[in-house]
Length: 172
Ligand code: DQA
Image (cartoon, rainbow, N blue to C red; front, side):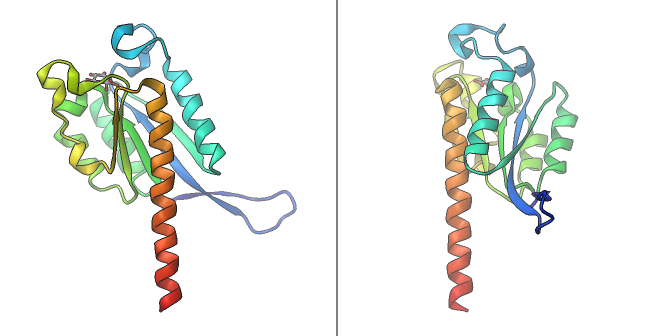
């Protein structure tokens, strides 16, 4: 599991903070200009700041990326496959990219799939998510608040699995 090492000023041993990675896919760079009835008026920067703040409130670091190139998205998943947790909104790739689905399968920590809009209540093709089976957390239709909920769910999952691991250690 990748943690960010930060050395304290006093030269004491480095702190190790969990790392949350936020990945946005195709067309999400233009949030704020996209149809407001589905996506509201929030911008990509707003979402990134919101997620960074929520992660920081839990003592986590956060890395944010957006790309309109499917292969680059796959490369980002590869790069961060050992991060503590991934929060992804792949945009339209959600509905057909088996390449992204297969990359997400390699991620060691929990993955959250988040959509601003309620994809289940839109066109039939948006009701299909090919990444759903590799996501532990799924949130849709809650706008920006859905991202906050996803961060909280990921943090809770990681804390619960760490506590379970510690319990196991204690019984050995
Ligand atoms: C989206 C939903 C997708 O169907 C769409 O292609 C997007 C955004 C959402 O956040 O609601 O680009 O992922």
